[in-house]
Length: 121
Image (cartoon, rainbow, N blue to C red; front, side, top):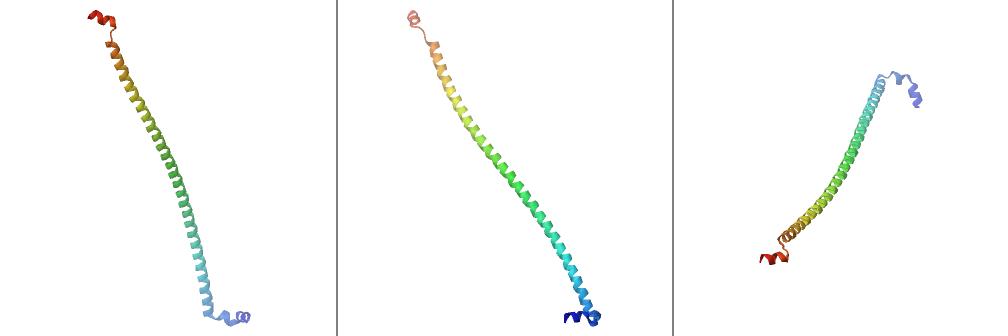
C-alpha cells in the first residue's frame, strides 16, 4: 500500500507534501551540522581535559619532588643541627679542659721545689 502511495502522481505533485519533505531534509542537515559541531566541541573539551590532567600530573610530580626535596632539606638540617650540637659540646669540653690545663699550668708555675722554700726562709 505504501508502495502504491509513493508511486501515485499525487504524492509527487502535492506541493505541501514536497515542501514538508524539503523542510525535513533541511532539518536533517541542520541536525547533522549540529551533531558535527557538538562532536568537535566534545573533542576540544576532551583535549582540554586531557591537557589539564597532564598539567595536574606534572604539578603533582613537581610538588612531590619539592616535598621530597623539602624532606631531604629537613633531614640535612636536622643532621647539621646534631653536628652543631656535637661540635658545641666538644668545644665546651675543650674549653673546660683548657681551663683545667691553664689552672694546672699556673699551679706548676707557682710551685717551687722544697729546697727553694727553705733557702728563702
